[in-house]
Length: 173
Image (cartoon, rainbow, N blue to C red; front, top):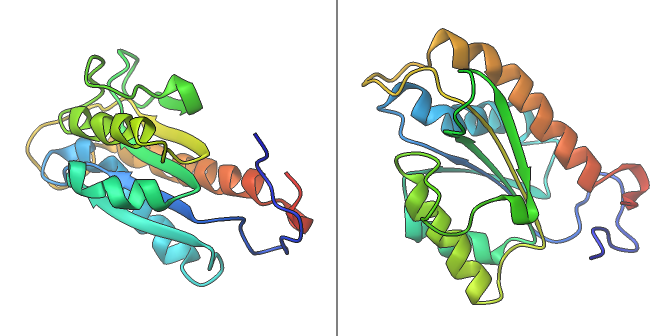
């Protein structure tokens, strides 16, 4: 699979790049993906014109058209992988579960179905990457736990790194 495009200039991305933050802002760390995508929007809205940053919240199946329209998709979420709270988890391509048989979080079952439907319809993004953290708290509350808050800058950097890998200077991947 060719992850680049000839003629791509530095600062321009090949195809539509979507960075999608998932989560419920009312359940502490469950809203991690939304907090990260908001931080990325503030930092990069002007300097990454080929990237769309979207707060996907808990929209579930309503996100299918956005996912299918993307050529490259980075998902940011709170991920229950049975790890120590604050562990950063990265999955790429086929490693990301597509169906509800593997539950990653409270809303994730529906989003996994979005990925599964996009795959069945032949419209799964060519490049797919998930970056998340093992939550410390899913209690009611609009603030991230101290553990998740401490992870936020690192995850922002990892998303930036993935975007650079997908669009290096000169457009070669």
